[in-house]
Length: 168
Image (cartoon, rainbow, N blue to C red):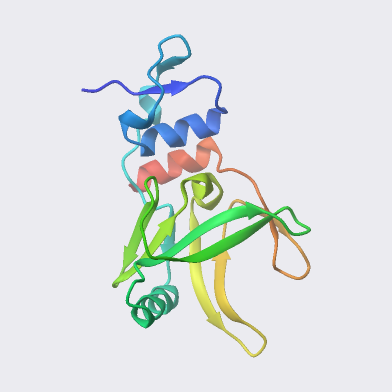
């Protein structure tokens, strides 16, 4: 069995999730700054987010509207009055490191830097009188701006990772 390592300079949460999800070749193998991953944090693959039927249908519509569309990419960026914003972009070329969520022909790519902030999120699509768009029901969201465009997110906790491991 191949030994996995993590860089001790990373935060505890990042090390636990990154090592369970990335191929060994992307990790720093320098023995001076790395140590073996504790066995209790070895995790199987799991979906970072889940899609509702409405979200999957809308993503599939987006994909079929453009010949070169492979799906959409979901991420997070700093911005807005609450500190972070969700990002959604059309994917015409897959990027190394992206997680891929597939449902009913819909493909949602998750940017690697967003994994800890999106873990356990349900992505939905709503059509209301005042708004039409994707909605993120995120257990890592601690608050939101009054306008609803920006959110405060915390990285997933080790407890969340253990719960996800149990459902993998």
